[in-house]
Image (tube, rainbow, N blue to C red; front, side):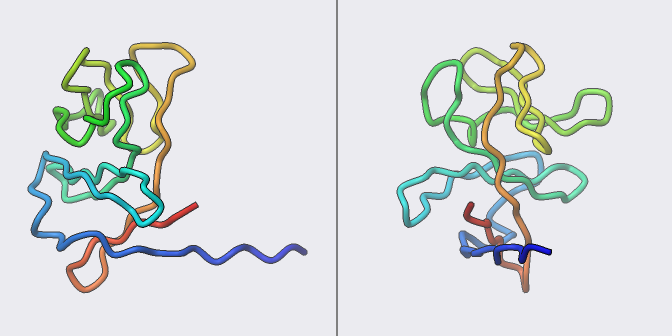
Length: 114
């Protein structure tokens, strides 16, 4: 039986700072930009802020919505849609963005580092 590595959680912002159906960008200590999203259903998700299609760090400014009940963000540049749960691109085969576990503790959003 192998031991699971403990996750390192980093506090990034107050939950109230992320409006429903919007995203915010957070710069982690290692220089990685993470986009934190809050859906209309009050769920929080974390993706890399880097849009793999355009190469720009802009996903946090994308349009948050859903496709058939699956929460997504549409890139503000070319409008590709990325699933918030998996990072999979709905519009370009074999394209995805890195996902980050997110939790809210005592009103503070935390992101887990890989």
